Image (cartoon, rainbow, N blue to C red):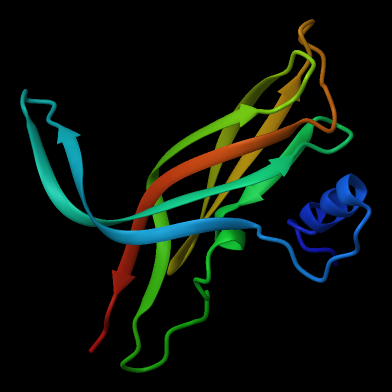
Length: 156
């Protein structure tokens, strides 16, 4: 079964004519951050959390769609934790932006899909490209940036 990000290698080969064994899929970093919440009773409060920032380049397929699975762009391994082990996963809230880079008019929209697969959360972002008449527009290259919580759970 092809990997969801294999299109990056194919796209680079078409653009450059050079066969590659690997290509940069994206960049991510993780560190301490603060989560701001607005209370239904008025006011706000902040809690400390870990935040992952991810970014990359991609393109929509011939059908004007590309599904980005966030863990494809990290080195987080989703294995069942053993006794005394911890685990990590990405979690909502999800903040995402994508910008097309093309010489013809194109718009991008996206839908965030969150699958709870205990003890992990799988986050897919479905990006859709459109022409100026609102019709699907295939093969639109885009850069994207995403910010999510990076949950670390340690059982020791």
